[in-house]
Image 1 (spheres, rainbow, N blue to C red):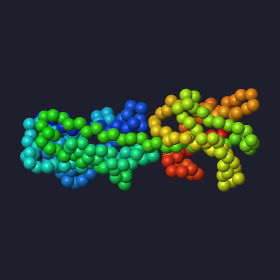
Image 2: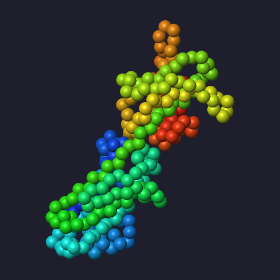
Image 3: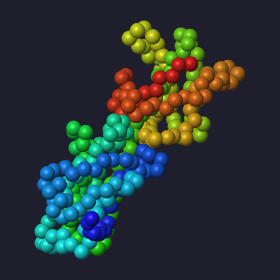
Image 4: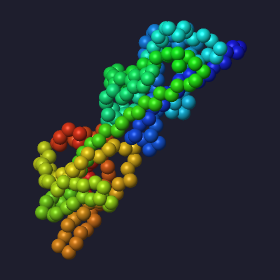
Length: 238
């Protein structure tokens, strides 16, 4: 049995403001044969702990001479197909000893490069925080009434007035079906969960009547087929 001891060399954390806990599960794996060979030669292990990925360095081992630049390349992979719908697809950032670039091909979301310089070869651990950002989208609601009486005046509201809506418009679908269309005036940040309460009202001469008090939020993948870019849709029957 090997008596080799290891220390924590690098801790990699993936953060995402889409999620309630601000962390996300992503897969980290060597991107090249050269990186695999370097890991084996240096005796570095890759381990996952909760949301973090950790590079374990052998203790009491001369990793490499200080003059040699050692670059490890890793692929960042997400198994959640919706990740692309709610995440801003761009180069995320870099630090003193690392860079991460957007790829978006063959299941690889991005590529992380780590420079194992003299600081990383010391007894101190090094933290790499990778921050992903959520997209912002217009919310569109297609409201389909049971009865085709479009003389009725309706409005959509959010209980605390944190979301504003454009006036409803009547639109036509290919199968000669008409519906109301209501779109938010501003883009809304996509989130795993919302605390918005949306209601649909009928405006009457003597007040208002609730038509639906549990309007469903649009999902990140429900891209609008009739509105401009950056719009997602929820279909509501009432």
